Length: 192
Ligand SMILES: [Zn+2]
Ligand SMILES: [Zn+2]
Image (cartoon, rainbow, N blue to C red):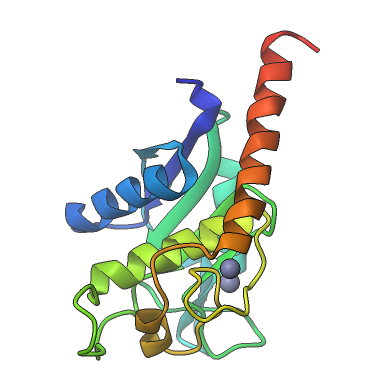
């Protein structure tokens, strides 16, 4: 395994291992890279906004970037605090488009759940939004296809309605990005 092909999962605070392990598995399935669980920092207190009583996700991404070890291709943080960016009331996560870091929050992904699908659960939602944010770091943008994992969701029920897969179009874009990354590390290895 090329160590630069590891995606780091960085839980902020304590998480049920079922959550981190589910994210680990989905990373392998969708992106084809191995994932390593490694907390980079203990809490996100530095990003707390006392007026909004929420945490600003962008400074957390900056801190992840500065703490990320060289062997990590991408870093995804998982937090249970409520995240925001100034123009929105809340976000399920944020990512650096085409960058290295992203974050997903479990805070708003707890109930209610749509009863019509069997795979709706708190963990399913976290897994979907984790893939969505990581997809952005691989340069994927929002997709109009409602069932695509890159579809932008306004509500938790929207998250339930989308599948846990990329649409054909996004899959092609992701495969192209992954090819570029693999080619880049090959060029590095042979010293070009
Ligand atoms: Zn998005
Ligand atoms: Zn799509």
